[in-house]
Image (cartoon, rainbow, N blue to C red):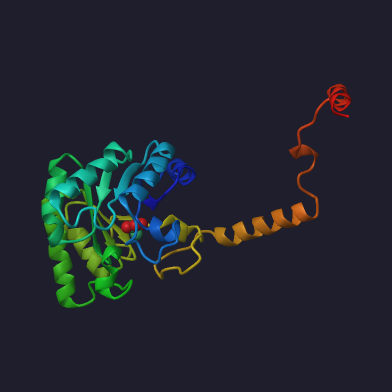
Length: 260
Ligand code: KIV
């Protein structure tokens, strides 16, 4: 699984045969420039979901429910989840949290909407965690995460993202659950892996989490392309003949006769 927020990225991920695309609320940070994911709205999410849905044909499309679209009220959670399918073109939704989300998950699944859970470092709770910190690192936190995973499975989740948790814990949870786990910063023992595409491509300028493998340095490449464009325009090397339209001699002479 990889994240996408726009048409061309979705197209490329789909063509690469990646099973699933997450329109993550990480778009708040890597595309919209916010400090965290909390300011992201339903409108933001649906706008980007539609663009991704236009680019992807084969991948399972999962839309990330933004902060406060499912926490306050179960009926609201169902309605907002429905909008991801009806207006956003998604196949499923993802939401963050454990036992405190069971009621909302049951109701959304009850409405016929597949739900992916998300445990461990759930970025919408960053203020409660005191930062983007790894979770499940004590015996009691690990036990609580395992219990939460069982509860999400029983509530009807078809899969669970495990983010920034110790590899041994993620592997044990993955073995014990009947549904697949998708890891990010959770080691190789999960059933699948997800990364934020902008991290993988080296497109996010601010920081690279330790668990990210950078497969390209697009930020640097982008800068080099912009420098080259600027130099070409200033040096009159661009546009050249091949990038330019022409008008026939006859038409040009006629035009000049009319305007001179
Ligand atoms: O928003 C997102 O991109 C996510 C992934 C990090 C799993 O939730």
